Length: 71
Image (cartoon, rainbow, N blue to C red; front, side, top):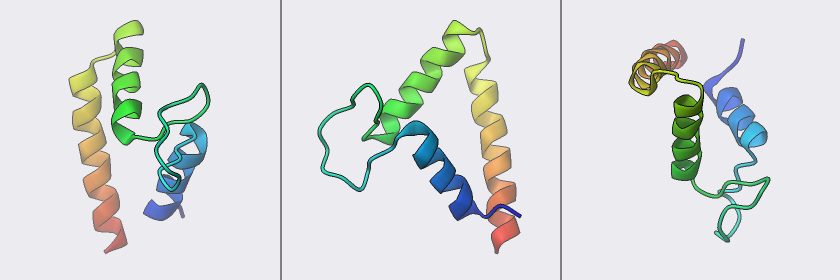
């Protein structure tokens, strides 16, 4: 079963998050700020006509369930 740490590390790997390095600004293959990832995900939703607010609501439901599961 996947843990919340596993989920976080998956995101870090897939998105090239480099929060443990000194901030140097985003590059073509790395993000340094979570806010930049969120902004780009919002652009993705706009491009593919996905309901951003609906995705956020659903993510909150999943997050709450996953946090409860680990307690």
